Image (cartoon, rainbow, N blue to C red; front, side):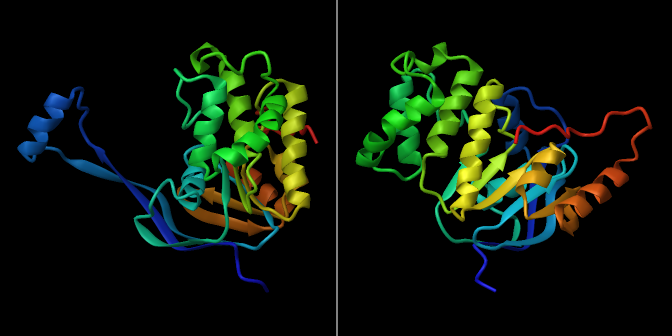
Length: 259
């Protein structure tokens, strides 16, 4: 077996949260100086190990608050684990929060160059990709307007277009496949599918079980920050749904697919 492109060994992430609400910086400073702030610990991930092979597509499922997004942020190096080791080889395309890194006072054009620089692209590389990014986002008529005049959907489309135009070896997708209208969603899925066909390793966090079935080679079920199951997508999905203990008339998690 080849060397994993992503490898997590015993990874834990702990957040320290104040037990009492602090409504101002002044109050925080007074309490901190007096050592009167008490915290409780929230473990978003606990002793989680996972490896992803080059070219593998892995779906991550679980309830809200399970630690799925934290897992992707650790892999993207946005968060540093409290315990454990993370090893990642290759350039990452992080489709996490699509508006992150954008400045609302800059134009769409300026934000493309800003985000390109954040993702490690030179100005020359962005110049070469610029027209394709704008065309994919369908923002030709708005690209020189300030981002604050964009709708949330327009901002998300621009973010998706920038990140997915990077030559990445790893793509991290966190519930962003519902960007824009149905036509644009199909474009997003087609672009991710093209990455898959090129042998890019992909991690997908989704509540859409059919997307996990259609796109993934393997599924991982996380709950309470811990891995509950791992294996063939259909088997893991069935175990996850069985564990939800839903009433008979409750709708199941999304099963529709645009593929």
